[in-house]
Image 1 (tube, rainbow, N blue to C red):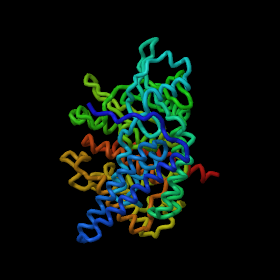
Image 2 (image 1 turned 30 degrees about the vertical axis):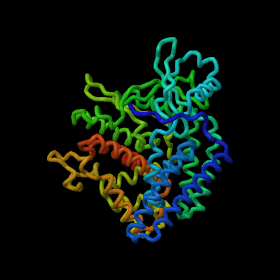
Image 3 (image 1 turned 135 degrees about the vertical axis):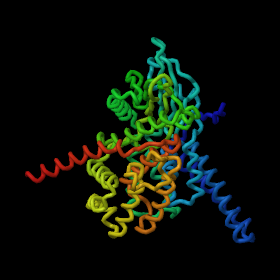
Image 4 (image 1 turned 180 degrees about the horizontal axis):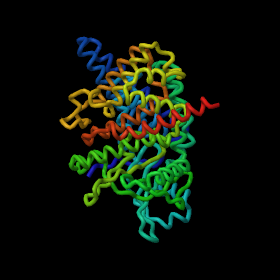
Length: 470
């Protein structure tokens, strides 16, 4: 059994207290790093550089441990930096920040009980709450519960006290420290991204909004037996508690999932990709968090296929119409590897218009690669296909090839960090592609995307005709 990290009695949410903790940790880490650098001053150049990397890695891990204790949006910001840090942070720092995606110390059950009593009052008497959390994250933790009246198994997502009120001060603190460090180029894209983080943080602590989003996705997918979305129990929901049905399942990378027959893993892969296509082309709402903890697999050995359990809708983002339009047009152009259509789709967006024509074409080739699994077989690298033209996700190295080309493209077109409108869609796609790779999917995905592209073309053509009639 995996050892649980020690629990905490409270979360530090006061601005002064959090600032003191973070600054103190920064000073300690900086002093240790300086001491390590001084100790290697007379070493050989190669040895000196390696020792500095090791010292930087150790102190980055120390800082990450301190961030994990603070929880709240500071940890969320660290998680975002881990995802996009290759654009502006040393590799040792981003590697350490990836640890923030792991389970951190939970709040003690006594403290959680105080929150539940304050939020639910006498309604808490109707429930038996398991004191061991199912999971602990930066903004809250989840406990399994049972309704005494009928034995219904429930999940309680409980927000840590004070984290909602600390979002703005946390982000302002981290932004200030980042700017002082001068590790990040102060570009328009980076400033916009920080504001996007602020917006996302406010959405994630907005449990009433998440409740309605969960209910909406439950209704949208209720008729499709490939998916399970938990049912919301409003009687036990408040501004800081979200109650849903408990849905059993195992993680995506669980040995039982990886041992499934190829056809069952392929069915899961197609279901996951189909869900992505619906989000972009039908609903205009995208789950932007690729964390595997947001999905489980409900194994159904006596059924034709297994089911994808979708959890945690706090990161669902309803993109503005013009950004959804951009995503759809870029996807359509990449699907057909149509360079003129791609360049046309880029018109009117600052990020693309600041590039030269050659820069836009380089970016187009990056998008062509990103959508390679949906391309015609003759446009796919031969080593990515089996004899039946199935795309071999595990063998394709698509993520590595895409990130490598993205790095070269970024250097050629001169931007330091992707604009916010691309960062979250990229995050979504990379999460979906990692899912495919982990379960070693071997599928033909072009036919899956074809109806969505076709429907979008009809709507776009109809809109063009309607504009012409006016």
